Amino acid sequence: MSDNPYHDDRGNKDRSITKDGGSKSDPVRKSGATKSAADAAFLIGETMTGGYGKGPDILHECTIAVNPGEIAVIVGPNGAGKSTAMKAVFGMLNIHTGRVVLDGEDITALSPQDRVVKGMGFVPQTSNIFTSMTVEENLEMGAFIRRDDFRDTMAQIYDLFPILKEKRYQAAGELSGGQRQQVAVGRALMTQPKVLMLDEPTAGVSPIVMDELFDRIIEVARTGIPILMVEQNARQALEIADKGYVLVQGRNAHTGTGKELLADDDVRRSFLGG
Ligand SMILES: Nc1ncnc2c1ncn2[C@@H]1O[C@H](COP(=O)(O)OP(=O)(O)O)[C@@H](O)[C@H]1O
Ligand SMILES: [Mg+2]
Image (cartoon, rainbow, N blue to C red; front, side, top):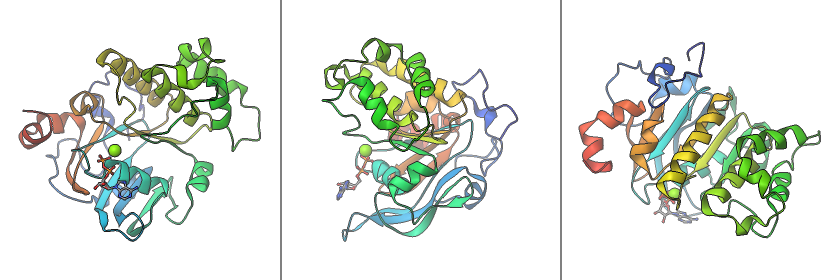
């Protein structure tokens, strides 16, 4: 990682990636797990294989990781296992190979709740807010593991998302799609996580709202919280990504910097519409 992880040239800030297992001049890796990346990564789900209950494996030696100062983006076709990979990292399904490491600690055996205590913030793809509660109550719910005074954190979240302050006493279910996503991200930030995981934070919003959400996400990353996110807006997401993963059928198909993936002919043809 570079000394100053918060460059101003995100958009693609490849220069911030100097120690993620491949030098920035590496070509896009065509396959699988990257052991070297694993060793250094702040958060990594490494060579994860597993599925739901007694069902078939959905993930096959899948590796996703993020480092401080980075936005790492996971893209890939519908049903590729992107959400499953996020849930595996969060401890919502059993993996029978691989491990999850956060800040040097193997947390593979921990429950999702315990992972939150360890510093994971997770915004799932669906049902990520309490619609009948007010915006402020949603944020308070986010602080459930805290025993200290969280008013400062709430003020910071209102600074980041001013519209939420305006609508703090309104039921979250009455908000627009983009505003609800802000509530969901704000709720996850209430625990003061060490890392933030977002599953399709821009799902169902207009391009303008998507850009705004990406700007806010970049802002969060600049406060020092590494961000691992799934995005269906692949091209736009890779443009702000320090690191990108293309998943196909539960496997790592391509891994590289956002810039590398955007420039890769294979990736462009297959996943970015040429
Ligand atoms: N709760 C679940 N139980 C069983 N299978 C599931 C569940 N959620 C997703 N799947 C299956 O896992 C595969 C990957 O789904 P998912 O991770 O949601 O893909 P993506 O997020 O990339 O669109 C799909 O075949 C899907 O049907
Ligand atoms: Mg999904």
